[in-house]
Amino acid sequence: MFFSISTSKLAYIAMKSDLADLEALVDLARETSSEKRRHLLRKVTDLFLADPTDYSEQQSHYFGEIMYELAYDLENQVREELAKRLAPENDAPHIVVRALASDDIAVAQPILTQSSVLTQQDLIEISKEKDQQHLIAITKREDIGEALSDVIVERGDDDTVESLLRNAKAQFANETVQKIAIRAQSSEQLQEPLIDRNDVSENVIISLYSHVAENLKQKILDNSGYDKETIEPLIETITGDFTLQHAQLVQERIDRMAESGALNEALLVRFLKEKQPLEFLLALAKIAELDVTTARRVIEDKTGKSLVVVCKATKFSPITFKEIATSSLTNIAPHPTKLLPLITIYNRFQPEDAKRVIRFWRTRKHAMETENLLEDEAATALAKQG
Image (cartoon, rainbow, N blue to C red; front, side, top):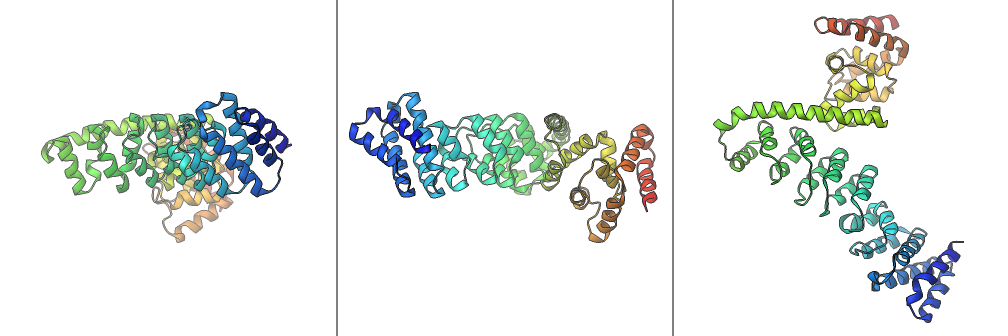
């Protein structure tokens, strides 16, 4: 069936070729060996690239379908060759370019970095689905819009975000820059490339002043025109406003994730590993259906008993509980000697009892602000299990 479909499409796209060329292509399409199919793919690609603007939209689409069918019936090396040939072509068929962009990185690299055929929506979808190698390749492009850069920042590790920041043509929304700036406070890798950008507001740069090394502090002073005496009074005001704006943006993001069903324990662990304390706190509060103050007190309870209650009530796995307890962001169980007893308690504690404790927290929320009811009720419930 595959070869008969390809034969009919070949006949259509080759109408501008002479009869000998058409017959040769059709004969190749009837062959079943891999070598013959590789040869056919090269011939079809040659025919298309000879003058890609000379074909109708339908012919171009058929070229893409044939290239796709042949390339994905053969080994990676063939697709690598095809990707290199199609990457610089503005009129390459979208169907095959889109497939190559989502392939293994050796295939996808030239397409992701060069192809103008990929739309911003294509790139956003790929950025949401693929790994850091694909993301880094995308950061090399010259047409990175604000929506795309935001997705890359959301999913990218520090190497990826640094690469994006060093792309002078990449565009950033103010909200995305704020996310990077908050992250840069604890990531030296992101500080200099952020400070060096010409499209970042002075307030964002000043908000980093207290978090960077002396050489970068001097760079901030040189770029802003301030000296140490005049910049100091600005830092507290700017940082406070900046932090409040960021908190609002993070809360909106967490709410959107919850509405779409994307907020789960795996994402919670990711926030921990990527050192995003605010994202972790607000996500924990949202998942556990707690107010932020109570969620913060859960994390601040270094006995770990409040965390046991929350994780059990939300039916987190023991692995997730361990990740949260041992994280440097919570510092609840920094040593195995403290973790092992908590794991034992966690495994024995029942979700129904955990939910009862959380209901108590909700009804006594105001009292807990001045008393130790949260920790006490958690300890009492766990003691009953023992």
